[in-house]
Length: 354
Image (tube, rainbow, N blue to C red; front, side, top):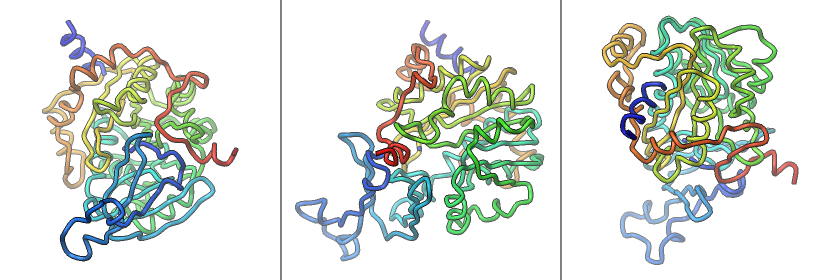
């Protein structure tokens, strides 16, 4: 019975914050991490390390070539690292956002399933996405006419536009319209409706700026009214590994399930996050997961090649293991303004209040 329910569930269809937003960002000389430093050339022995606090009892670190750029905005601290394993890595408030060598996994999974499941997506609204990668993937679709990227932090966008060379073409595209505002405020003041709305927002954390954008009232009163009749909503939904999926992934899925008729949860492993990421996709129109149709739409609609996704991998990403499937089925929490769930850490809002 459980296997049948899991199958039915699927047919219906990024890194945890540190304890303090920037003070937990650490560059650690390699010799400080070992009683007996490893042998090798002098550069390896004296490398600096990026260290992120994932949980109270868990850290994740990797070696650096150096810090390329750093800045502080009204809302957050921004750092661009040059890492040995993952290339350039964007860190905001001490939390890894994306890394050059594997960010395509996260951004392809966030964007393309929704756009490919839609029959004819023309207009896209991106909540967040300041680094430009979500816009880049959206603009690969030949028939997309307009992409609005709404990010609250102008400095993040300017920083990424200058320093993330892989997204500079997207930033120059005439179809991209950049708005600096809170996504909720921006949607509430417009009467425009969209084919696809994409949530590329930071995880909900205590004191964070985006927590209300993961709640049932927001999905019900703001997102749904701004989707066209056959519109699709998709959001990143935190980490979705064996030990992390109950943090926010299952509750975001369950919350969205209380708003839309058809909801899909799907996952993929992202090496630089040291875990699997989760996304939730939803619509009030049936969503057809057909490998041949997806492959055909990829060929017809998308400029260039996708590095990670094809029709089969999109469909297979919706098949989760038994433990996660059971958790999705049994989740009861619906996120509201009063009933919340956070990942580890807290944000700048709380720091400012203190």
